[in-house]
Length: 212
Image (cartoon, rainbow, N blue to C red; front, side, top):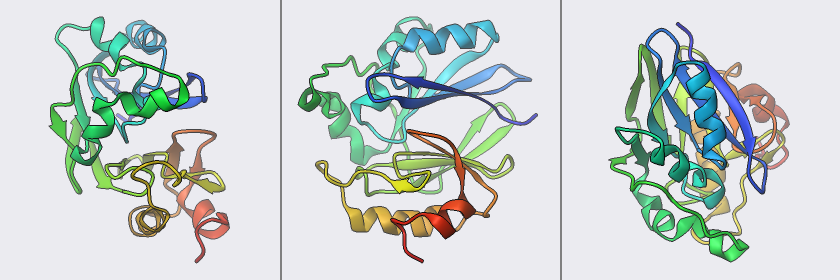
């Protein structure tokens, strides 16, 4: 069965959260539980999906702000995965205090993402790619079979992630895009952390921030 994907636009900066599932088994994961965890939970319950994983592309507050509410409602707790280079950012609430937000970061990550790591969700296989630049531990999650990539704040439709925050690097971000995104087929759909989806080909040829 193809991966089922439900997108939510949540929180103070309109962050995309993705509830994904293998519908045949009901196994589900939340990629970047941005905010209002109860909204994501309600959708999963309506579909009879079991949220077993919280997968973070990175640890900024607007991508983890709903994790506490989701975890509080689940028994057993979901397995939380984050790249270790973003653990310090997670422990400080994702930098939210700088913007006036003190969030509950939820349960501590217990799985360390790494380059090339394989994830399983029911019958679906996904690949983790380490893409530093927006944050040191930023990753994207790629499902080759379904030609979709959840790319957090690495790249957007016609834009790229901020590199003016602590731990960010514009040089590293552009390198990550060229090596880890532009190496995918042009028809792979990119589900970003903000805004509408796009494709690898669209960004490869038209994104003004990533010169050929």
